[in-house]
Length: 123
Image (cartoon, rainbow, N blue to C red; front, top):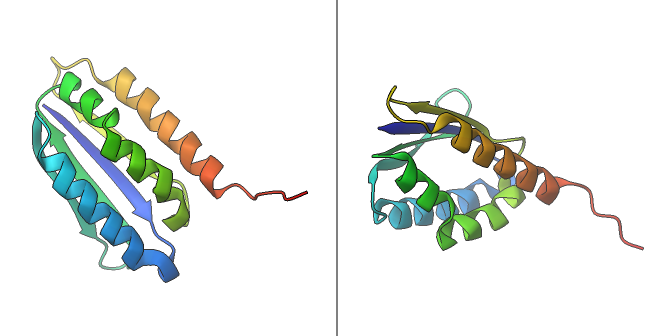
């Protein structure tokens, strides 16, 4: 069993658009093989904070999720709605060798989000 926790800090002005994007991810991700649970939760004291908790049966299912077309689309749009970098933690049962692979994916996601938020120079 693998649990992934991601924390998002959303831009206030585009928060509703971000939440719509996240709702689509919930619908699509819950249909995937190996998805035990997938849900976003809104912060109470930090109103622009959203936490994603997702649970997968095994590393292969999680990797399939990371390679899905809906994940690719989600990541291509996510940077537009973020105030800061996504913080992700992965927890796995002792018999599940997922930590290194998930950390590499998390790093790739951080780089993609940073690139999307980087200032654009127009010549």
